[in-house]
Image (cartoon, rainbow, N blue to C red; front, top):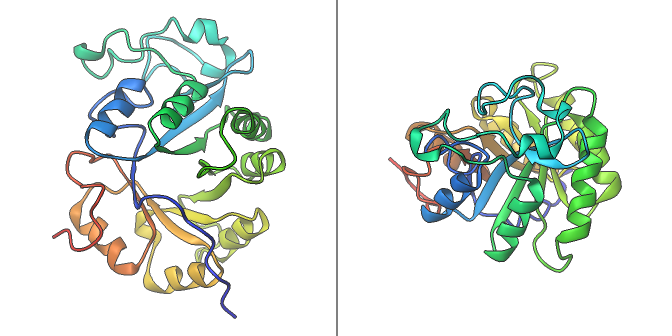
Length: 258
């Protein structure tokens, strides 16, 4: 028995961490650059500071993308705000700040943009971070417009977000299948009442797309930076493509790429 597909009020193309690799990831400069390239849907990574503020950063530790050291979640937002999050990328972005999730969300609201928040908790804060993301959106995001999308590799984070903000759609991120087929991951997504599965793009095939769509969930992919890979996903009938290549893929592209 086929279940009706869940609503999916988002564009197909998603700008990864703002503008992919063209600007320092998860900074406001990156999101502004992605918007300059015409993108309307932005993915970011969110975690909790020591004093409970949601800030944008992918890694658990600070070294790769800031001038700081150690675990980001062990610093207060005041301490995080003093770090340089741009000079690692290029001299032009020296002095770039680590933004809060609230700042990005309010920018998206002001510009009528869509937001995909990957809940990226510091280890041990999975459910707490999900709940904090839900509480933030309950506070600032109007209920009468398209809600953000919460995604995570951590089921506990999605559970926390669902318990607090059930109106915000959810997607389960998967890099490798737990059972080799995807069935176990699909079951987790269904148990969490997700609207999508967001997979490493190489995992999708026609049979799996049919199975996931048949269960009522949407099919999305990360991180797609090659024309052949994007075309394959479009031909398979998937619903979302997360990319670094905001300079190569037009966000209005729906048909043939190559």
